[in-house]
Image 1: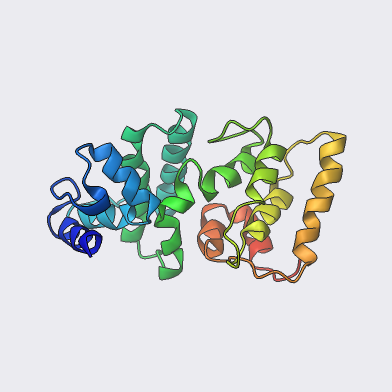
Image 2: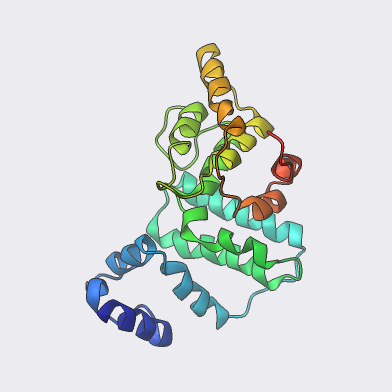
Length: 216
């Protein structure tokens, strides 16, 4: 109950002005980490940004490119804490365009764009270099990404494997064999997670034909 009251008061007064429950630490960095861990951080950032005016004179395509550039800068810098707000703001700015759709909303979540999220995996395949992690190669990023997901929850393997097929990062002969084995996931009777498909189809249009196809 204390956590619920604390979160409600944080939404009303700001996450930097309220403490309580598991968010009682003096350090704002610690509180932000706890909010991210429990999936609440983006709610507070949305509330803050709703009070701000956004420049949206550029085109939708330019806004998407800007988000990608800000995100890449963030990942390549080692995901410093002080750049989190800039990445989220660049993503949230997209909501001010008439092309934004409710189906894109999952992309605002920490699980999508953070250093350990979905986006750096996709960009690793797109650019053929490791982005946002300490893995040795894009193939290692794929192998690690395929293990994500909670038991009895829809899996993201389809998204990662189709992105790999769309970009075909360089691999060694042995990695190519392993990747072919990974592709067998697509033929299995698995409930896949499609929540990011619509936004990724717009952000990375070269993957659109793959993501919108129900065939492996």
